[in-house]
Length: 254
Image (cartoon, rainbow, N blue to C red; front, top):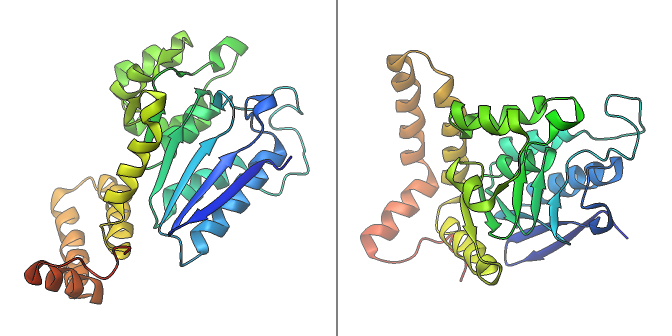
């Protein structure tokens, strides 16, 4: 059984975590496969959107604690940090289809996705404190999405919460019934595909870059030429022309 599955259809690459017998725990094999498959999809010019999902009733149970202890030498080609970097730096939208529970590192993977939809029967939790550690690495992707008070509660108690609560605190975007999961993901994909590929990449860049500024004037001075370049681009010209001519721009799938 391969650790990840890949399906490509109409510009959408769906990567499926495929270790249901181990609750999709992050083994060396799974992390390597996920990073390699994700990188391949992001480098394919025919792919516009990437979806990450799972088989079984658990999206991802975090580190594989039955394998070698984290931090020990392993024959690992890629790390979980590579996966985070690929998602966060990706110019293409990455959608999380969270069809099961997310625990520890699995929470980080769900939160790293640009937009996540979680089935409402699933639970989410930072279980690290209950085995004597802390959610250090995944805090880098989770904390920017959460209020400090919510993060403090979830980090310190280690309690699992509902998908609805996960959406409330910002770790996922939506909690939906299982029978509506695919429809909601498809709806998001369709909306995202209406955006220009370069514009989508630029929007992700804004979300990374602008919060780094501590001076408002400096942020404006950086953003103004960034915006001007987008308006002057071929994609910008096509988008404006399509608006004036009341037609779809040429990047929308037909």
